[in-house]
Image (cartoon, rainbow, N blue to C red; front, side, top):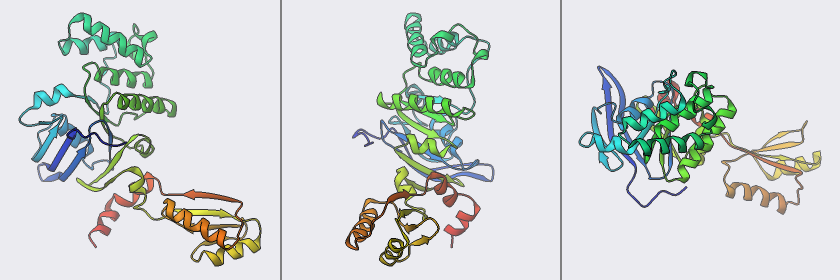
Length: 318
């Protein structure tokens, strides 16, 4: 999804943070265009939550420049807070209050007129499919319902930027996909979202751009497809009708790996259209029939494993 011509929603330049002698962020540069989803991936301890806490004014950065919604987080923290919403790893829902009461409390904390608060509460209960449970204590809600209520509470003040820190942790596949649909609807409303997650499929499904954070540094950034092309291992698999066709295809496509038992040929490929077209053209020119073709490319799991951890850092310094 293309970014907005407006100024970026989030910008950091040479962001650094240490706790004592331990460096958590070591020169992090991030730019998030308005109206997009930006995913920050990385192993535990990489600095993801620290980054979110700095961007949401919960932590003071050690050094560097940080702007959110066009405001400097150090000089204009109140303006930053007015523009953002945060849904953290752990639910902010009060279990003893009803869903409706939780939302009304958020409206009161933001000094919304009582009538406006009631209207916003009713709107969000409906949007998040919580109307039937509105009068029930949150302690009776399922995990997915509590997560939806948590996000609804974040939206009471109509933030233009939302930080979602591990938003689907603990949810089953159905609950996770429901949250994905909600995120997509927020994006359609023009909201900017920064997402941190351990579920790499989640970033693949939702993010316009992904940054991989490891040991306090951004080690790769791009669209999900661009990141997948950084990792070798993609291939085009061809299924041939007989051994003669398999022999001919193997001779036409040097470097391919054949499997005589399955009558298949695996051709190394980065997965782009040009590579696929070249394979098909060479088969056509040699008059070799292929019964079936499939394309396999690395996923974000492969990217994550290849670019993070001690072995990846050791390789990068060679």
